[in-house]
Image 1 (tube, helix red, strand yellow):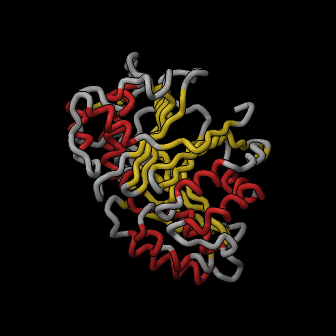
Image 2 (cartoon, helix red, strand yellow):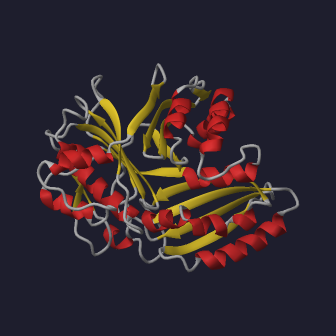
Image 3 (tube, helix red, strand yellow):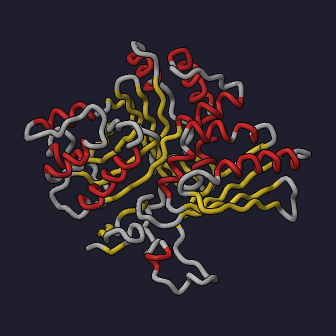
Length: 380
């Protein structure tokens, strides 16, 4: 059973599984809320930096408008809200090197930030409120979540160091899963593909609080220090600015998640890497997301859960597979159900040609990431 959702005004309808708990690809307008804590005495410096940034953001494709607000109770607290035509153009910008450079002037006057992103579901006031929801580009129905927040980090290590890095990353004591009364670290899955590392986490509660909690744990800090000499991008964890830039670039957001049914004890967790052609990462992720939505209603599919992570041209699909990946139909495990989908996928994937017949098994093996460790808290 499915529900109907419009993607973008003027675009054809498509069916969206009610089991999809997260997606950025439905074409709805996006509201971004940025909470900013400014150092005392730096308010004017912050305002000037914002005005310079605002002029640059105005020319970013997909940007509609923004507002800057200052608290009436605490002058150090500011709020920036912005509206975007949809989530993909915002994510393409916020995850870009251009954005990293653009926000540098803010760092010296900002103590802390917190970013929240929302699809617009309903609105009141203004001449457009009586218009067709598809014309207003609103999310037509609420998504059904499972209470889990999914996020990942990715970085590369120096070629030749992969075996040593894998040993270091696998050999550590798990941090305390309880962050506070409302936040818990539920699962950490770590994979490697060549010299690329992907660490996926699942959190109940506050993702930012969980990330900060993990970063403060001595056993985690020791592992991070141990792999520092092998990283392709230098970092100094004792320098807040160096650490901030590294983890900003390492962030690999979840752009889509679908659950076909409740987890089975025999299900195995795997990760597949889909390197995209330059500039095609978001389109490749959307194609995979569309196929995973359809597969959620296909009883043949061995994939019980799928989460797609994407940043720039890095696309990773984390899947829980009934009976394991080796026993699965390669086409269904890859998120394909017919040759046309395979051909479409290769238009966005780097160094790929449309696979045929038995070539799908080889393609699956090439995409398969090596599991380093998969740890779940006892009561997750």
